[in-house]
Length: 457
Image (cartoon, rainbow, N blue to C red):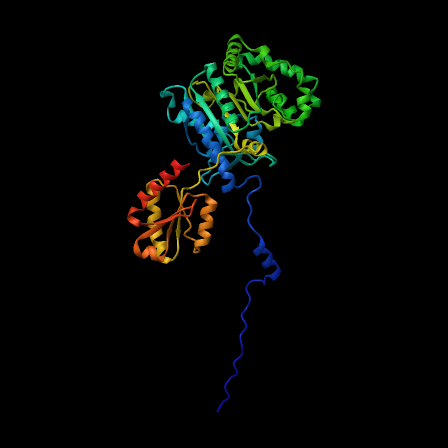
């Protein structure tokens, strides 16, 4: 009888290189982090964001400003034509890319061109003028992240389109100062200037070129290029060396035509009327090509580097609509940096009014009680009772501790016995007194109890 063949153990062929345990362990420990230059807004900080937005809404809507939302993504051409091809934003700071279909698009670096694009696209010239809108949202610039500057940042903007009256300039400045004061920032200086119209700026442009001609070597490299393309933008440079050169520059207001001079004079008179203090700043230019006539910024009065710490600014852009392909329409706007405002509020330890404490906490014990609690909680929410739940907790003690922490007035307690008998316990958290009520009468009893607590206060 032939011998059975001895089975040999086959070894599996390794098709992938063996990974070192150390490498695997290290990879497991690696955690994804936010992109450099952007930040999370967590619940604790969101309270101050919500507070700021509520203050803004209360201040702007009585003046007729209506809230809008514009797309974050726009065609790149919009900003090249609107913001200005020679600006730092377009040349250095935009997040631009091509779609799979070859369309060139950009994450908005600012809001105004998008609003004007919408105005043209939706025929808003047929509406009552001026069209007044406001919006709050993220903007994107690919600049070096540093204190107070982010690659994703948020702005509050006001835009008033379709009117060239100087009282509108004063109104926008006045509203902005009111918002900042309501947010606890009452140490703000309004810096203001007039750039005039394109016609009266021609002579001033030649004056600037001549003024900087013998000082070119003392300017930064960027300003040497700006001097050839747009000498007005040299005045907007925030570098110390360029600001030192610009100290004795002839003021642009000396070159205003009669109409622009009258416009600026009336803006200042209106600001005087509402007691807005301002500083006439002859070197204030703003960094965008579309500004005409009135420009302004809001600087912290107690900051050593006030210009670099600007909380925002704006001005007139009477020629921008035509540049974007619409009919000639005057307009002006302001943008305030939300991150900078909130940082200033936190630095000053501004005491914001927090959200109201809930009135009722629903406390449960046992599986049947949890099921009953779901329906009861919905009923209380539906009738407008300010109520919270702790369905994830199983301990009565931990839920009562939460009730004390939240500062609720009443606790609605459902145990196994109550769930079986369709009753609940209503506990007064101030004196510990409890009463048993039918679930069917809970809503009425809660309302009575809360009214009683209000009268006792």
